Amino acid sequence: MWSDSVEQLKALNTSDSEVAQLVRLKQAGLADDTCVALVSAAHQHKHVFSSADSVSSLEGAGFSDEQILDIAKTDQLDVVSGDLVTLRLIGLSDSTVQFLMQRKLSGQPTLSSGEISRLKNTGLSESWIIGQIKAGMTDAQADKVIALREAERAHANTGFVRVRGRRPR
Image 1 (cartoon, helix red, strand yellow):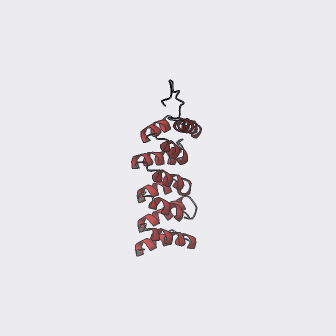
Image 2 (image 1 turned 135 degrees about the horizontal axis):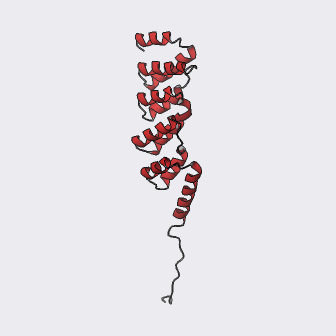
Image 3 (image 1 turned 120 degrees about the vertical axis):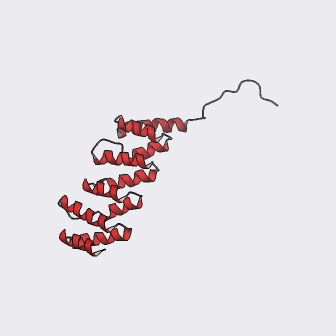
């Protein structure tokens, strides 16, 4: 770290456990300014910074430093990081992930990442899923839609066909 970043961390009374967390963040490739901002955000919420794993996961999934800091400012790094990484791994577009992240951070109801993944696996489009989330679809409702679509897919092209007439010899 640069000396001015170290001075900023000293001014924040960074503990030894936070230093260990910062070392892990630096190994993950985070910028000095981001590291300082993460510690500062944790101190503003009256606790020590201990979310290096969550931040590293988000960084590895392609979230920007700005997005990570937005999550840290709401004090939800450990709460939403797993879901957000899952959403990214599902293959959703950046705009959809951003939309879902904003809903989660603002406390608006949204489907769990597991249900979104299952809906996507049944062949539904992102736009349909987003429309249903905006309409207030719950996980239970999504589960019913998934069960219906999976049942339809399992029985597709399996209908009995009656053959009339004589068998050729």
